[in-house]
Length: 376
Image (cartoon, rainbow, N blue to C red; front, side, top):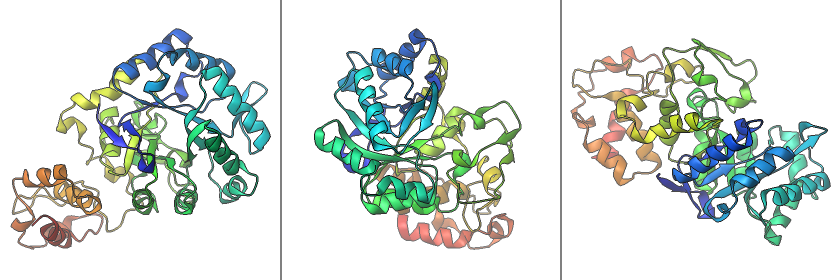
């Protein structure tokens, strides 16, 4: 299992983590089995937000004897009203539920304590106000009951405020194939890198919607991190089956992402996600899917290769993908992948045929010139 560093925390986390949202209501023996197989497979990051007592008891049993091997999160603000899940901003009530978490999880601390599900600007203002949940989370860090403060969010504008404030160490945010063209996302991801905020990608399967055996994909705004885009489409006609491997390949191609938390309610679903590591490059290829979700993209390459055929036989989509990754961080791996291309940017004759075919108005010749400057 490959690992990446979780921002300024310095923690090495597995690229694929485990989201436990769908383990609520699963029989205890099966939930424990999922967690055990995840850890044995090399997963060392697990997200938990449910406040349900029996769920917490089950997770406490699942991590017995394994606590120091895994980064486990808690969510300040996830509470219960009667027997139903609820969100609260009452510091005292949230403190009670956090202490309940520690007790039922049989631990003295949470590795990351997230300010839970904070999206609207006015809600964020409440959370960060004097005496609010941010101060309470920071006090738990001083007491050793939490090691770092995070924010779980589904809104680009709110997430950017938190990143730039310097108040959080980790951001959990939707990153998936359907969200790649959401306005502000191309600013959000680099902001995480600039401010050394660890980025945890949630909703990697769009809450499961991307994997459903239906041609029409239905997605809610919160699954795409675009709550500030009223009137945006929510139904998409997908060109083909979308697999867990393709979803994970897209997310892990974003260099700012430290880990992903796909929700798995069974060992079989977990194994489907982990098949990413045995998959071929062809199985990982997601470029033909991106145009489906390109409703906001203008002038940005979606790697669909509708610009082909190229007289110089350049794989334009692949080359531009490597260029964009290299502009963010030119690693040895990216440079090596570029060198492996049969035809490179230096082979471009600037004939302009590609630009005429591009449905998104990309300046392909300009991209080739950038690639020559970057890679040589």
